[in-house]
Each structure stands twice: as structure tokens, then as C-alpha cells.
Image (tube, rainbow, N blue to C red):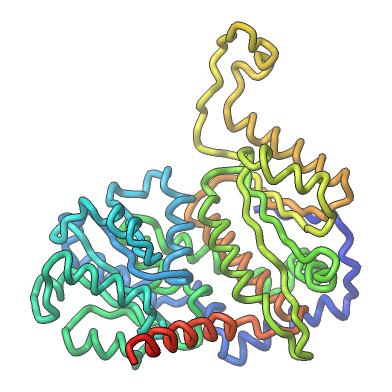
Length: 417
């Protein structure tokens, strides 16, 4: 993965070292557990052991019941790698939102006996998750004591949570999240690794990719990563919007994962009680050249941009040498690969953005594989931690989200009363 900054960060050597030191302290302190996930041998072995022991041949559907950090990372990785040879033909279905139309549409033709249901909630009491499980109990006419319920439902949660107690009472297979790993940083725990392993992906290569970047960073060989985070943080008042412009549709859900990671981690009061943060926006090229790009080029210069370019799509699909009457002016692209066209569009768009004086950096990925995806996920996790450090916020809490949950509960309790 090649990373280039096309702006001057202005960071001093002292501040550069402060960035490295801040994350090294978090690693040593043990309060931020995602740093340790790439090298957790126990985590890998437990998941491999489950996949070998469970009769996965009869399973056609993997249903992930969870929201936010419990689903977005898995969805992102699967979509980035779904074209690769390791992916088997099982359906990956997400029960995230409590939109009734979506619930019924996604579950309409799902047979219980052909499915494995993974219930994920760190706190153990996420209302979207518990509501979806109640729907499934009703749909399939299940009781908690039924053997088939116990065979097809799996729980992932914190040890000692209400969900853990429920799983223990009814003999459900349970995987535990490390207590010091927040939901949006949990994709390299059982939250992401279990469903991805069931789908056939090489989770070892994924974790190896993340570990190699981790080692490089803590060996202090990732200066551009620290520079980028510092530049974003000190300019959050004049360019409070960060746009991830991914030139491959494979990154559609990675963009969604990044939006949650940044929004929930960085948008909050800093330690001086000032409101800070960067508004994340994820767009896909070349589609959004025909929509959002206009705002970038001629709208307010209040955004930073990251361009993601995939060099090898593992696909040689070529534009046929056909001339369409009255549309001959597009014939210059005939006989070129579609991948050549989209990468040329990426380069041209980036040049047009830079000419407007907008701060741009570029990430080039040779090809999508478990290893490169692992590196990409961990890159953005480190970038988030660094940016949070320079913004002087607690990167790992989400008090604004908790407030909404309290208000929701109170509103229903008032109706009942």
C-alpha cells in the first residue's frame, strides 16, 4: 500500500514524536485493546476450532444481528473481497436497522435450518439487536429451550454482560470481546473474524496485514500517518470536512465503516470543553464525479480529500471496439480495460481537485486481498487514534450516542406509564 501526501503538514519533529508517544502509551497502558488484536493467537485458534467443529456444509446463510461496529467492518471487508477465490457461496445477511420493510425483505426466503445466526452486542442490551432476535423467535416459532435454537444461534458480547448471562442460561455458543475494545474498533475480534472465517476468508492473512502495519508504526516508520493526522486536527476549524473518495465500488461499505469510525471517535467535546471534530463523507468514483465533485471544485474550500486508487482489479474486462452512431466522440477509449478507464478518471479528478488548492492525499493499493484489506483497516484505526490525540479528545467513548439511548428509553417508559 503506497501512501502519498500532497500537502505540507508543518509538523515539528517534537510533535511528530508526541504522536508516536501518545499511541505507545495507549498500547502500554492496556486501556485501548484494538492494538493487540492483530497478534492474538488465542483469538484465531478459537475461531478456527469452531469452524472445524461446526457442520458448516449445511449452512447457506450467515445472519449477522448487530448494528454499527457490530456489523459495518464485516460488511466492508466482505464487499471488498467478495470477488476473490476464497469467498464461498454462503449468503451474508445483516440485520442492522429496525426498518420493518428491510427486515422482511432480507429475511423473506431465509430457512432457519440452513442458517447460522450471530447475535452481536458488546453491552448485551442493544435495542436494535434484541428487537431483531425477538422477531426471529416469532418468525421461526422458536423457544429458548429448543435444541435447534441453541444449535443455530451464537452470541458475541462482553464477559458478564446481560447477553452473556442469557447465553449461559440457554447453552448458546459464546465468543467474548475484550473489555478494552470498543465496538467500532472490533472488526479484528470475533465480531468480524467469525463471520468472515465462515465465509471462507483467510483471516490469518488479514491479521498479518494489520500486524505488519502495526509493527511498522510502533517502530516509528510511518511519519506520513502522523503528519496526516496532525494536519487534519490543527485545521479542523477551516477544513472540518474529510472526504474519502474511493475509486472502486468495492469500497462502498468501507466508506460507511470509515464514517462511523470517524464520526463516533472524533466528533465531541475536547478536554477544554470545546466542540471539535471532522465530518466524514465517503463517496465512490467514478459515480460521484457526476454529483459531489461539483461541490468540491466550485463550493467552499473547507474539505480535505483522500483518494483511494486500486491498481489491479483482478479483472481484464475490456471496452469493446464498437462505434455507436452519433456517439463516436467516445470511441477513443475503445479496446482499453475498464480498470484503465476508472484509474485514469481517478488521476484526472485528483489533479482537478489539487488545482483548486484543496489538500489531497492518495492511497494506492496494488490489489485487494485479505492482507491488503487488513492493512487498510488498521491504517484507518491508527489514523483515528492519532487524530483524536491531536484534537485532544477521548477517542474511545461516545457520550452523545448514549444520551440518545437514555432519551429513547424514557420516551417509551412514559408511554407505558
